Amino acid sequence: MPLKIKPIIFVAIIVILIFLGIQGLRTVSADESDAKSTIAGLKVAGLDETEMKEALQQAIDTWVAEPITVTDGVNEILVDPSQFVFDLQGTIEQYATTVDKPWFAFWESDRVVHLPLQLNVPEELQNSIATVPSWNAEATLNSVATQASFLKEHEISPVLNDLTQIDNERIALSVEEIPTDTTGVSNVVDLLNGTILYPGDTFSFISIVGESSANNEAKNFVASLVYDVVLNTEFQIVERHSHEKIPTYLEPGINARINTQYNEDLQFLNSSMSPVQINATVEGSTLKVELFANEKTKEVLVQTSNEEISPRIINRYSEDLSPGQQQLVQEGENGVRVVVTRIISENGSTIEEQISRDYYAPTNRIVMISARQSEETTTPNTTGTTDENGNPPETTETPGTTNPNTDVDTIPEGSQNQNQDPDTQIDLDNNGLPDMPEENDEELPEGSYYDKGGNLIIP
Image (tube, rainbow, N blue to C red; front, top):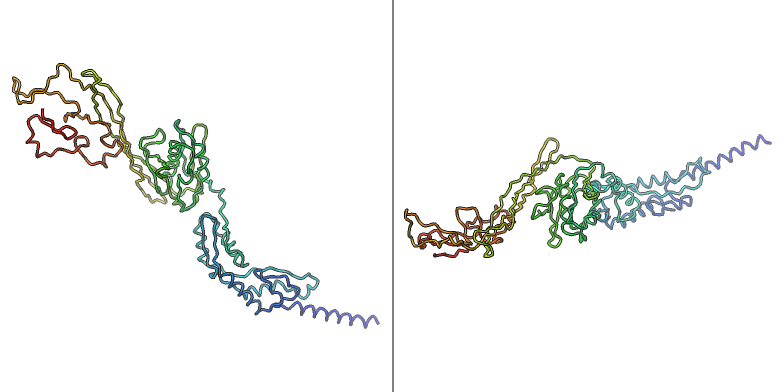
C-alpha cells in the first residue's frame, strides 16, 4: 500500500508546482498580488500592457503641460518638459520583471514596487544647468530627472556646490591701520564679511552696506581696501570714484569713494570661472580684507606712475599789515597725477589695461601782503618823462595785479577749480581770465594796462 501512495503524492506535488508556475509567468497584467504597486505614482492594478501605456501616456501629457522651474532664489532656469523622452515600453517590461515572482519562489510574499518612468534627459537641459557655477551640475541634473521620472514637482531646487571649499586659496590681501576719523568700521565689516560672488555676479558696495550707521570716512576706508584687493584680480572694474584728496592710507590712485546720497558706488564683476568669497575682519587697530577662491589661475601686477604737480603762489593784500610786511597764510603742498595700470598674465600671454587716471590738486601757497605803500614809494611817472639817463622811471606794482615777470598769482583764491586736472581745463592766460584783444594794445594810452578783472587802468 505505501508503495502505491508515493507515486500519487509525487504527481500531486508536480501538478501544484505547475499551477503555481503558470501563475508566476504572468508578466503584464496586475492582479491582487501587485495591487499596491505603481509606475510614476500611477496605480496599474488590473491593467494589461495596452491599458498601462494609455494610462501612463495620459499622465505624461498632463504633466508636460506645465513648465519646470529650477531656481535657488537668485538663479533660475526654465525647462520645457516636452523635451524629455519617456520610454513606456521599457518601463512596462521592467515593471513586469520586477513584480512577478518566479514559479519556484511560491513561498515569497507578494512584491510591491514603485517604479519611475524610464526617460532620456535633453542635452539642452544639461548645458543650461552647467552655466550656473553655484550649482552642482551632476547632482542638480539627477534631481530634475528624478522629479520628471515620477511626474512630480514643477519647481525644483538645485543642489548647491559645497561653498566651504571656496577658501582653498587666498588670492588677494590688504591690511591697513584704521584711521582715527572713522566711526562704525566694525558695522560695515559685519555686513561685508563672507560675501560670496559667483562667476558673472556684480558686486555693489552700496547694495551690501546699505544705510550703515558708519560715517563716510569709514565707508571710504573699507571700500578702498576692497578696491585694493580687487585690483589684484582679473575682475572687471564697473564703477569706482576717486578721493578728492590723497588719503592717509594706501597709495595715491588706490582708493575708492562712496557717496550713498549721490549713488557713487564701488562695483566690480567676477569675470573669473570660480566663485570667490570676501572676508573682512578687524584685528586690533587694523582692518584686514581678503579674497579667497578655489585657485588662482592668473598672475596680476598693479603698477602706478605718479607725476607731481607744483602748487601755485597766491598773494592776498591786507590793509591791516604794515608797509612791506608779509604773512604766510597757508603753506603749499605738491599735488599728483596718478595712472594705475594692471597687467594680467596667463599661460605666457599678457594683457595690459589702464584702470584709472586720478588727479589730486596741489595745495596752493597763500601769502598775505601789506596793501599799504611805504613812504619811499612814489606814484609812478606815466607822463612819458625820463630820468637823467633817458630811462623811464621805476614803478611800484599796484596791489591786485600780477607782475608778468613773476610766477605769482594775486587773484582771489577760488576763481579757478583747484581740484580739476589742469589737462582738462581750457588754457587761459591771466590765471583763468581771458586775454584782452591784441589789436587794441597799440591804441592804449602810454602806461595803461588791463587788470585781472579785464578793466582798463589809465594812470
